[in-house]
Image 1 (cartoon, helix red, strand yellow):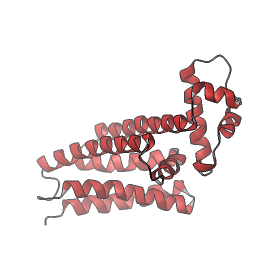
Image 2 (cartoon, rainbow, N blue to C red; image 1 turned 30 degrees about the horizontal axis):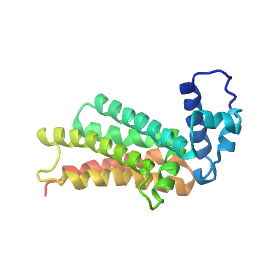
Image 3 (cartoon, rainbow, N blue to C red; image 1 turned 180 degrees about the vertical axis):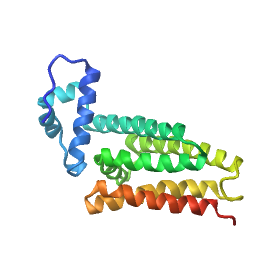
Length: 202
């Protein structure tokens, strides 16, 4: 449990609540996490939690907004550090994997909400994240095409979908194995295979 001093600014307390949710989700189903659990993790009362977030859904939305900001920042850093577009694709792939290794509760939170049949603000936040993710990949595929690094006529839309789906598949397998740390070496082999495939001529 992390004890948070009183009289801190609202933004600091909100960030602490988001962090508590991420820690709790790393070891349990997000569906079972209550505001009482969050308060207990921080040494708050439940009333203190609700002073900073009016509803439980508002907490989950803040968590997903944090994920959006932090994951996209990590992917953009990987893109900037790349020597070539293909190197960028590999770095972005591994940056996503390492993000999940650092924050194993994130995929649990995302997958949980996607099971809901209604179109929630949380789903909209995930769609926004995927849209920004696709923009990063589009820049890299465009640069790779201009430099002749990928096969002529490559279906970039399909290649983008496969890229994201492959990461998601690896994440799902690591969740099933309950061993997020084991994913990195396999991810290296998978992204190498992916990069070879998109360089092949039709």
